[in-house]
Length: 126
Image (cartoon, rainbow, N blue to C red; front, side):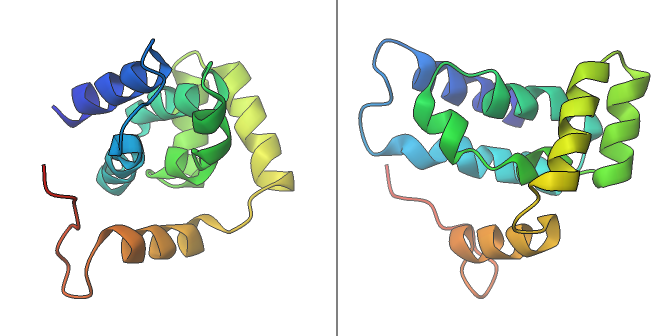
């Protein structure tokens, strides 16, 4: 279900409404939740949101760190083993040149942004 929500949020953001309204953070919070689950099978989906989008804001604002919920090694291994050699190569290069902030620091920052100090996910009321 979370994957479907992420896909719908991305499609909406890339669609004809071009992300009108205040719901711009929903694609990022769903990406973070997928990161927390840590399934490397989500890495192509998250990679596409960062590197294969037609939406400039998504391409710039989507943090590549979100792709590595399963960890650096497991994510890169999964990509290689499942036919995503180009994505693996690009992410390996990104890790060697651009990983700023480090994934662990990024995860702490994003958790603090989306969650209250007592662990409640902060979402805007509908």
